[in-house]
Length: 304
Image (cartoon, rainbow, N blue to C red):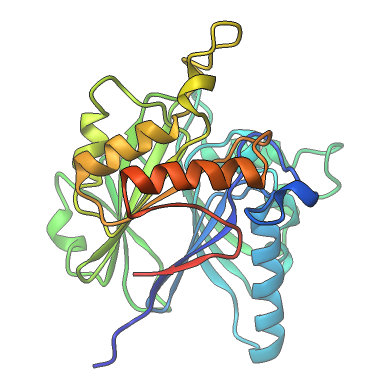
């Protein structure tokens, strides 16, 4: 039996706001969006402006092969830099597209209401409920696991405490963990296929001694994608400390990667003020401490 594809492609790697221009050509200026190809399944994490380019690619492929676009979209949270590309995601305007959308309930607001607010007229001319695609939107919690089986079968959500055995035999599984070190909270995802796993843990702030729950969640992952917005100097700056902002230093990310025994760590959610030269320098320092470390770059694909 041929080995199935398990690959991660970065479409947006910035935090806060997009930063296009000559100083961000190497690493990219779009906000967070990640494509995961797990066998026949398309999984998208977050809808920052990076999702716009991904959507254009998917629609071009659809026009070429006439196959409907079916995707599972996972939101880590609904802050603006993780949803601002959603109104411009072209597959959502196609009647043949099927989008299974999962994410957290935040501040007592359901995911669907939060996404609708991101497209609320008059800020945007088309509201969420006017889109032609089929959208199945659901809140998820850290007691849930999403299982993906046959390509034409909808995702199944199981409670890991009561229905885990029913989901476990499925080909692709997504485990969920809620993090609290970011305003209003955030979801981390662990995507597993066969003996490989990738963990997405963006928008989180490190703890003294490391986030023990996240270390356990990411244990021996083939790839950990971790927030690394600041340097230690920025984080501890006396005049403008970033403590409590909900983001990590690259040193925190490396510490967690080591503790979890991961093979590779992609540093992401780059500060909009960090240009290519700055990120290159940080990448060199990070690799000196952990050879499997690298900076997430737009267009980079990592095969697992």
